[in-house]
Each structure stands twice: as C-alpha cells, then as structure tokens.
Image (cartoon, rainbow, N blue to C red; front, side, top):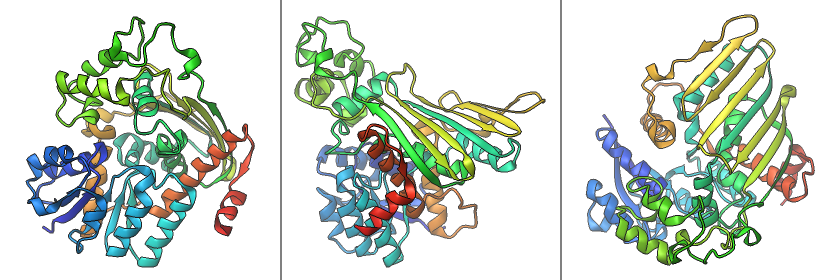
Length: 421
C-alpha cells in the first residue's frame, strides 16, 4: 500500500491535529517534515513523529526552500501568511491541504485558486465539517428528495461564551487586520456547508452585526488589566478559573503543548490570554446574522452567536414535503415528512467519532489519502479550492454588507468587481 507523505507548515492546533493522524493511519500516511517558529511545538509533535533534525524547520519559508520532499504540503500557518506559503509551495510542485480560511484577503483567495489551475495542482481546503457523519447524513436526506423541494434554511453557530473570549477577544483572531473578519475566520465552514448541502449558488446577501459586549465601557468597576492581578469581580471570563479547569485538553493545549498549572499560569501572567476581556484591543464582532438568497428561491438565515452556554451548531431545513432539524454537538438529527411520524436518525450506530470537529479531521485526512492514492470512492464531498473560494466570496460579501449597515450585495456584481481588479 502506497503511503502518502505530508510536510506540515505550522504546528499550532490545526497542524498538530493533522500530524497526529499518522498514529491513526500508520500504514497509509507519513509526515516527513514540519515547520514552526516555536521549537516547543516541533519537539512536542516529534515525540511521536520522530523525524531527523534536518526535517525540522524554524519557518515555513525554510522548509519550502528545500527540494520537494512530500506529496502534500499542509499549510496551517496564520491566515495572513497563507497566500505567500501556498503560492511558493505550489510553484515548488506540492499539492496542498490548505487550512481555512484560504486567506484573509479576497484577492488572495482568487490568486491561489488561479495559481492551482495554472500549475495543474490539487488544493484541498480544510472544510472539515463536510466530512462528518452528521452533515453527510443531512446531505443524503436532502438529496433523497424526502423533504421535497428545499425552500428555507436556518443555521446557527453557537460559538459559546468561553470560545469567543479565548479565540476572538484574547486569541489570534481578535483583530481583523491580523487575521480575518469573524464571518470568515469562524463561519466559512458554515458558508461552505450552506452551498454544499443545497447544491446552489448564492445570488444575494446582507448582514448585520457588531462588537457590542467586549468593550472597555462594559468593564466592571474595579477590574484590573489582568485577571491574574487579583480581580475582585465575579466574571464568567476569569482567565485562571477558566484555563486551569481545562488542563489537559483544549484550549490549554493552544497555550502550551504540554499544559500544567505552572506553565499555564506563567502564560496567563505574560500574554493576552490573561488579560481582562473588557480591556483588550479586539475589534471583531461578537454576534452577526447573515441572510442569503440562493438559486431556486431558497432563503437562508444564518447566525453567529457569541453568547451561548454550549458550543455547537444547529440546523433546520424546510422543504415542500417535510422538515429536518438537528444539533451537531449532541448528534440529534430528525426529519419528518408532512402527515407522517418523525424519523430519528441513529447516528450513534454509525460509529461516529466525536473528537476533532465531530470526526471531520480524521475523515478529511482519510479522504485525502484515498484521493491521492487513486482509490475509487465518492469524491463529491472533497473541498476543492474552486468550490471553497465561492463560499469565501459569500463571507466577504456578507462582511461588506455588515460594514455598510446591512446593504444588499448582489454576488454577480461582487465577483465581477473582483475579476476587474
């Protein structure tokens, strides 16, 4: 059996997740090189990868500069670095597994897709939710016709109060200029799911949202600049209380590859992760809603909800002959034809993996292995760059609408302006 080889640029949470799949598929994949500017990240992964020193690089640039050494390069660096790393790797001869979002700039998404076509390279974007049993079952139900003609879609991402504080107030995605708009950074999964599940293109979009809560004027009286400075306020966003209760696991694994109370407290005392959420320099929204009109008159309502107790995604579909509803986290999925009893879809019997985006991380890597090995299987869920940038364009259009106070954006006009640049 041919092993598919991987070189991984960026050993943060996402790069480490993909590297760890070698433990699950030891006969089918092999990580042969990795790069990160944090030696501690390389060393943590190398405890099980056991690569020679000359295959460990302190930057993606240094690794890409070497002669091609793998079938696939994983680009899991920061959003703003994706274009430079992707284009250089494509020119070097690599096919890519590209972490979402493709880029935090609209024109970069277009340019990466164009380079892949010009060079004849495959670029698979990591829209891992497509690969979960939950959403694949929904796709099968829609395509079976049991709901009739799809008329309306309601979807929501329940980000959860602690996740938005960790990633989008204190974390790497808290400033749009350094990362991406929230609707792209967090919700390009959802934009992709909407287009994939329906099989339709978006015609029009509008959006509303703002940064309402995590602002200095909402800071409780007496709260210090850091939670570690003896904050007297009872607050759900207290950093030591939250992070120390999450050892081991996410998100303390983001702060340190081998978290313990001592190293996590040191990080909280010296980094943004220990700062008061009301005294940061964040500027991304904490709630947003998007409305879309798709082909065939399908209407879509999507909400990014920063203030929820649970972290999950919910979906409700309305067709001319039936209705579907589900909760991603709890694996509850049901549909009902009008005039008949509801059907409970038994996902538990399908050996659903719940870790790593509901098993999506593992299934993505497995499908990529099969694709590059030339296996005969259904590739309709593969997230190619051309289909992915379409959902990115919708996210960028939604953000343009939001910034302009909810102004309607016609996708034909929006993409035409992009082509003219």
